[in-house]
Length: 392
Image (tube, rainbow, N blue to C red; front, side):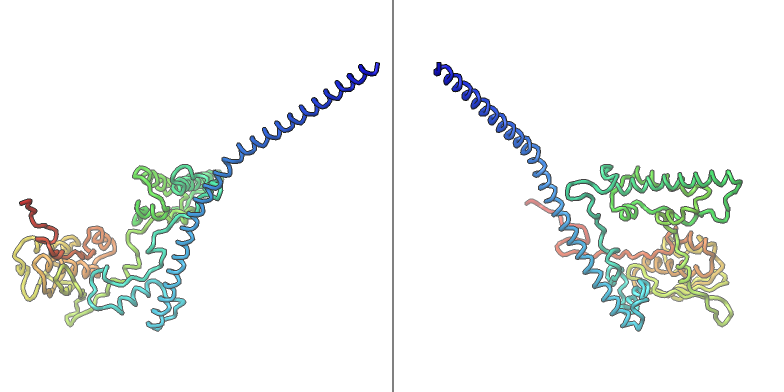
């Protein structure tokens, strides 16, 4: 009877060990399965984080290098401005950019008529183009809410314009309910101003925009400034419009002097065009007398040079109202006529109103023409013309 009992015990132990072994296999399988799932899920994240960190690291290195370069340039600019102020006997703390330009013009009067030949000393931010700051973090998450539009700064600007329009409309509704009308004296003037050109707007936004997008910007700003309470958004509007002519430039217009006969006169020196150099004196009132190197207008043979000289007088309606005396030398007829024309136009500013001066500026009468004859190059037939190439 003992044998069956032992057999039963063996069977029980065997079944018990089989259950334990199956449980161990099940646990090992679950652990392996869990570990495999972890590796499968975590591996791409690690690789992605590693790739993003490398790109971000390179971007931050470039940005850090640019910041260090700008800091060095700013430091050199501050040191140079301080030395220049000490040379001119001025206070370095109150030495402005206008003082710097005047000092350079005073220290370099040696006939450097070409603007590119003159020294330049300005803020590094005005000379070197700006760079965008970091737009995403180390994980690749963008900072800007409109990052995926492609031009986040531009579309943020349009969003701000719409927000300004909505705020002004709400304010107008409140004023209507109160029975209050807008003050016409506070209305913003659009004459004499124009919106920032496309190039300047792109530089301000540090983004490139298309012509259609720029036209949308102009339409949105026109709608904003047309509102009756647009003066409440004056600070925002002034950031994106530019005055046609700075009123401070009118202070540079010379005041007329008086000659022995009691007539007003203004003399303009350094009248330049190509290789021609001259000076022009305009007297008011006059009878239309025109003297060029001791001769009348027939000093020039061709009709084009005569028209060039008479154009500023006809444009400002000052023909036969002033007397002109011009001395010019060097160059040919075209260069001498251009020099005299510019001198007459600059002198007439003292005898006309501001509106006429603005019209003269828009017509190009007050812009000096710096173009000169391009020199002949070595190995060429002319300035741009090449020798004929022959194969044989």
